[in-house]
Length: 259
Image (cartoon, rainbow, N blue to C red; front, side):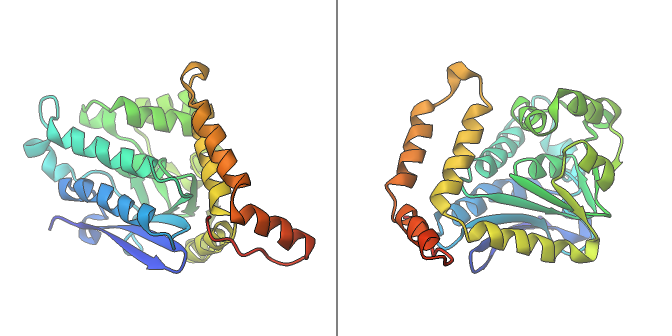
């Protein structure tokens, strides 16, 4: 079984689902190749306001890359496998809409790398995190390492890689790896609640905040200040800005349309 990556849409929420339940949603080469198309689908759908990443079933988020393929596909310099892997992460990071990861069970290796592409990470109390690259002897892509560092910092990144140990949800929360931990039975309802709160806000504002935060994380000399200014300008020039002001003055809930 090659596994699948599929998109499910429920109103303003677009779900990207990693599905290889029989192997705890381990990501195969075919699944890495499918991720950019899934990302494109949610980006181009104007009805989708927020994206949620999740594993299929109730046993795991993503238990890493499918190691059974490594001997045949991930040898030497890695070649096309590493290129496909990189394109998958680039596609997830490029989603301009808010992205939430819904994490339960194992979130290991490639699964942890997928999770940190999200803006927010909500975890069940049974979630387990690890990056076991050191136990496999593989090299780790600089771009993925950079994403992890931006989330948890250099020291925790080194701890995760140097020890390759597993940490539970409480430890992940303490290290800033996740946003919130809830009981497993409450995880999906909590994520839906957060997604609904996000979806009710002005899409252009959220996109501008996401772009600005991303640029501010760069070295000052390489920041795209023109892109930041343009994103902010689009907010003030939008119908949504006028609607937001009117709704505030009229003491009612605004109805935003992303334009």
